[in-house]
Structures are given as structure tokens and as C-alpha cells.
Amino acid sequence: MSAPLLEVRGLGHSLGGRMVLAGVDLSVRRGEFVALLGPSGAGKTTLIKCITGLMRPERGEVRIAGAELSTLQGRERRRVAVVFQQFNLVRRLSALDNVLAGRLGHVPAWRGWLRQFERADRRLALACLDRVGLLAQAGQRADTLSGGQQQRVAIARALAQQPELIVADEPVASLDPSASAGILELLQAICRDDGVAVVCSLHQLELAQQFAHRLVGLAAGRVQFDAASASIAADTTTALYQSVHPRGLAPT
Image 1: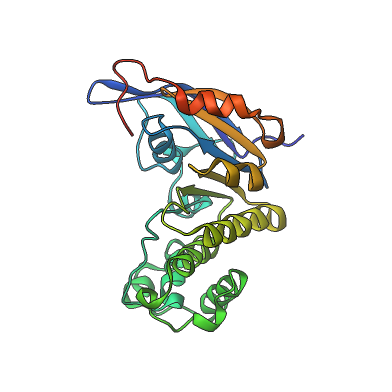
Image 2: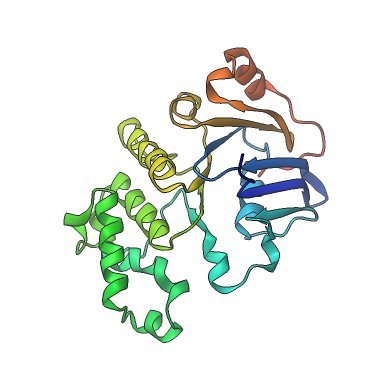
């Protein structure tokens, strides 16, 4: 069995003097889709920020392909791509221009500032839009697209980064059920076909069980369960969401 792509060991962090992560361990292999579940305040958002380097944990470590995350620089940091709940697109730019933002870590800074990308980068960005079913919308302004389409553009932007790991923070929270299923099916296909690992926080248990290989339940900043989706019993997830956070835990 291959070594994990993502390794989280003993992660601990507090906000305002209150513990939000208390010794979290997690490993994810290439091509694996892992869904993070848990009630509000469980620690999911803080864990995701630590995995993506947006926050440095007070204790523990995050490793990508064996390298400590904090030591990665330049193109090495492009190993991890992020998909946000609110898409984070530049609304006045076209879908293609938004996807080209995924190439910024691969080109000289001046090309990014002037949006003068080489032909190879444009071909790659168009291929990524084609991959998410939006090639015909390449020239369309982002703010004219539906919510589901905007999230697909965000995923195409992540793919243009050519990452090894995609971290998605509640990527379907603002979408209708049909669009939500389409987004998660797309992420599942990326895992299967490209060998990219996906860590995705979700509130929709049914969707998590349908599309993720593994479910990781968080409550009170601790991992409550970590197992194959098919093996998680209904009473286990019910208990997760009915758990009462201990005094001193901060919301995340």
C-alpha cells in the first residue's frame, strides 16, 4: 500500500483561549475522497485551514507527500488546491480568465498581472473547463453563471493548478440538491480518473455517504470515527450530530 499523500498528526489549536482542535490525526491517500462531517463548532473549518496552510496549528504537523506543509514554497505549494463555499471567482472576468488564475503559481508574476498567459496555459484552462462541462461558457462573465456553474468554474481553476490534493470547504452548501450532486460526482470522478485526493467538508450526510470513500466525524475538536462510508451505521452519525460540545470549545 502506498504512503499517504496527506498526513495530519496530533493537530491542536485554540482560538481566543478555547480549544477547537484537540489532537486530530488524519491520513488521505492519492485518489481517495474523504468527507469531513460534524456539527457546527466541531473543528472542520479550522482543520481545513490548517491543511491548506491558511492557518498554522499550535501543535502537531501537516505533511504533504512526506514534506512538512510549512516548508513548502513556490510551485510546491500548488500541490494543494482549495475550493471555497462561495466560489471566490472574480465576477467581472470570464470563466476562462478565472480558470487561468490557477496557473498563477506556474508562470512569471508579470504574466499574471497582465493576464498574458502563454498558449499552453490557455489550452490547459480550456481543457479544464471542458472537464467540468463548461467549455461553451469559457467567454461568459462569471457573474452571469448559475451557482452550480460558478462552482464548476472554481473546480476547473483548481484543476488548472494541477494539484495532488483538492480541499473543498462546504462546496455545495449554497447549491440546490441537483447541483450539489453534480459537483460531488465531479469531484468523485477527479479522484477516480486523475488520482487526485479530495478532502471535503459536508453537512449533507446522504451525499457524503453516496460519493465519499471515507467519512471522518468530528465533534468537540476530536475525531469521533474514521471509516469506509458503507460501514458507518446510522446511529453513529446521529450520535455525532447530537453530541454536546464540552465547555470551552469555540465555534469554527
